[in-house]
Image 1 (cartoon, one colour):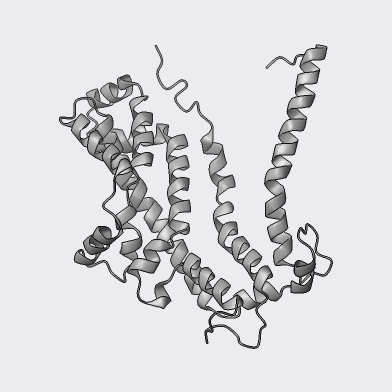
Image 2: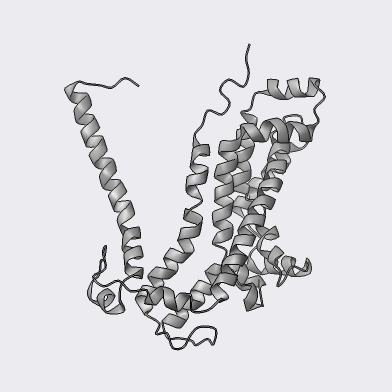
Length: 291
């Protein structure tokens, strides 16, 4: 890219950089306030409405949250559900998206209509619960994965991405004796890493933030994911309930606990972004066909 050294070009660069810096600052400041608030004292939080650097550093909120091993169990549950749920969702979504991307598939338009229909109309809470119950998934981790295994939105995105892959690649693979599954796993998926990484992240965030499904389908509190447990911690910190699982000797600082809960719930999934960011760039198909 050639740098514009004219006065208008330099002025545009300055204004553009300033505007983007302000937008970035406005975006980051609330998160910094939450992190700083989780490390401050309840007294300072009550006096100051906005904190970026605590006057007195305090770990009372995190001491209260981690006063029991229950939170580590809940994080293990969420991590397992996120890992296996994302893998299962990506497998089923990729298989269905590849089939719907094939122009020679009979009834493709009718199936796509049914997929889009689910985006506009759903069965509702009670019918969905009855289906999950009849499938025998109540009080099992599968109830957090199978009912939401395929997202219609993600399916359409992946299908459109598969359709952009040149047909010459598939025809060449068929000439070499490659099966449909071989074409999918050896050619289509490797060339679709930007879409795979992005949709995997969408699924991972969804499974990590699982809350309503756990409330509806899990009766055993030992199987609760982190989001449900953190909600219970916030309720306990507000003094509305009492639980023997948390240390009664540790005072629950209300506002700082809420800040700490946000940090604990957000940080793990936030750490995944740097590893997937490189796959967001487009251009994976450049040079895939020659001649």
